[in-house]
Length: 162
Image 1 (cartoon, rainbow, N blue to C red):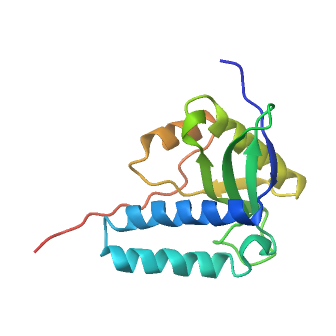
Image 2: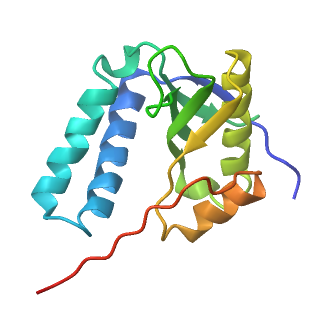
Image 3: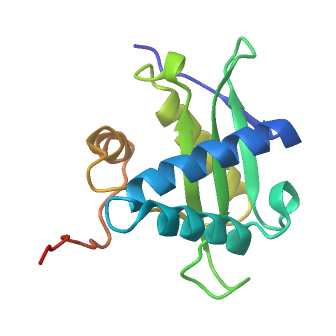
């Protein structure tokens, strides 16, 4: 398979709304494995409000769609400051979210979006792009590893019942 290429552009307001709805639904689904669904939904919404206080126009954050060479929107991403570092003092960026739309999955677009995100943060003077991935998302983990990402820490959890 030939390597895919994408171009990133800023989301429109309607694209941002759809991406936020999708991201929050996915995060709520994952968190609901560890807490009641209503609490998971509230925590997810609080996270969006905390990290994107000005929505699409939050300074320092890139909320982008990825277009292939034919102009089709194949996915989106949210790239911003590394939340583990003090504001304005870091050489690393954070990939908060990446999404390849269903018709384009398993065709190399995830890697293409990662490559474009890396180019974006490199142009801003960043020297690393970091991210979290859900432990059970084996397809995503494999894609990140194929693209040179290594595990830098691991957080384990087990739900216990009494």
